[in-house]
Image 1 (spheres, rainbow, N blue to C red):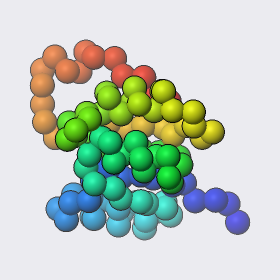
Image 2: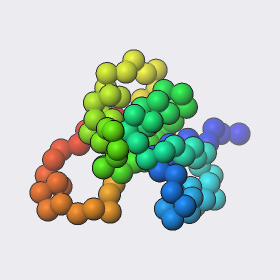
Image 3: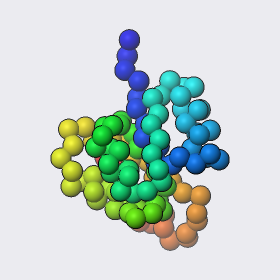
Length: 101
């Protein structure tokens, strides 16, 4: 049997995260949720070593770009793919290049 793809969902809200996690689980993904906080995301990546991290660009204590920098500094044996999203719109933000791991 093949291993399930593991996803770290950096949100634990009732209105978004739970329905999103349920859809991913229905498609065979292994989903772990953490609070919507950049430092919590870094800790969860270290503890769970997910294949994919899904997070908002705007996070308390450390935003998504700070999380990417933190991941770069960590000596991880397994680097996750990172997907950054937001429901917030900034006209010029789309021009900031983001590096995928």
